[in-house]
Length: 260
Image (cartoon, rainbow, N blue to C red; front, side, top):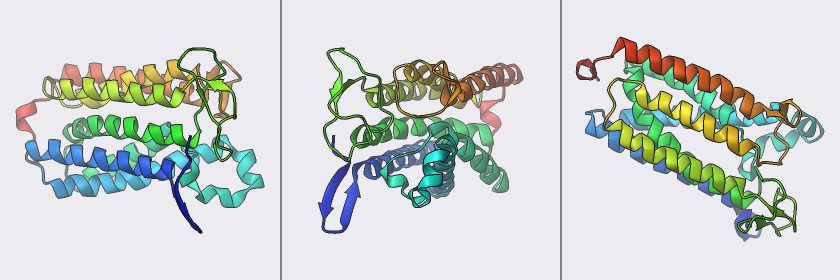
């Protein structure tokens, strides 16, 4: 593919970084749009998303560093070159969730209604950003002979060259975009606050768990070649998401009583 989109002298624009940034921007615009329809100031949404963006990048990078610690011990300066690829989604999700809850409580914003606004935006941004993985060659798949296999040829790609591979980056993107469509539909039909964000947790963890079996990049394993780090975290996310859906449904949080 094309890890570097534009190169002019010492100036390089990495495709990965551009698409990840585009995904974040699309997500922020969608969240601001949904928030405005709910009577929330777009500026509040943008401020919240800024904190989510920074914490997500830091968390995703930190988890990648932990998983690939041997490489970074040998190449410490590579820690800061996140635009070249190397983010673990669950790391970003966990840190962003913690920071988002802290920010919303600090500014007296209702957590679950806001989370339901963020959820579709999160899925949309992820669906776009995963194409950055595709162009960079990270998160690559196993060798395969399926008709839709892809072959990487750019020597700067992170994927093995000249070998037909499962396009797992595209699988991940399509998974996120399907989830996005479901969440948008659910958002306008939800019966309690928190239903959308925890439905995202259920759908994403299941989709990611399955897609992990088609991947072949170095991403860390809890049980070698059986259960990857992301699958292990995904099981935890799935259990928590189901629990929260049941608990919040029982509480039947009134949609008409929230204040912003």
